[in-house]
Image (tube, rainbow, N blue to C red):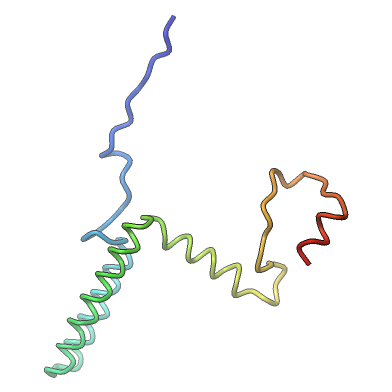
Length: 111
């Protein structure tokens, strides 16, 4: 008996992007630019808001092209780096399992 294969369609397995970038980041950048333009109502604010929007959209597209889930990677990185007072460390060496018993010599090389 042959193993049955089921194709996974691309349409059901895509990342949630908007205008080529991460959906939430692109919409938040648009909201900030929109608020800046319409709250100041000056030509300089309009030019700066449009430049901010174009730069943020370019950065979001570049980030999504590299890795569509880069925002979550960055947030996890900030969680590890920012908590110096907590029990979280800045570096976690790779391990095969959390139940591995490391020898004393291995623990000394990471200090």
